[in-house]
Image (cartoon, rainbow, N blue to C red; front, top):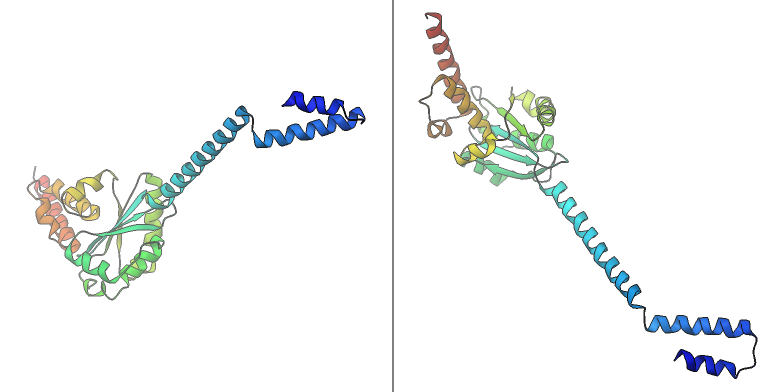
Length: 234
């Protein structure tokens, strides 16, 4: 094909500059119709790399938005857990007893900041009957980063709902969450069970699961006092 083009040009009376530029134009048009294999391969490779890059960005966005990195247990008699993403937004709310389920059937907090979610839950009409004079509102925080857990706990203790109802705040080891769930308990109530079991190794998770937080703390104080008295006479 190229030889035919050259032969045709030899018969045309025109300057070498015109011939050269015209030849270049025809060659460019020919390459557009029949791309060079290497150029085609690179074009496909670029498309593949772009697709992979988009997938990586998408996975990163999913991880940032959907994957929980910290947790808040809210226990009175209802036991609830909030899972928070890296932006401190609630990605899930889970109940660990029937009273907790009744709360979540009435109140939706997914997508809220944890401060707003806690205020919404605690001040809701559904939870008010449990916040009596003798009840004990307890917040327990766990996170992969202990410093993050302390930051969240400090913020919760400054929430209006915590202060208005004399809430108590604690931190827990994040590894205790799975163990708590195996026992059918929120990790906040499970932490109270662990403290009680230090003074009474006969107590069971089944017994503690059916106690309110006020009852659990009463048991802890009673056993602790008994334990201290026994050691005073040793």
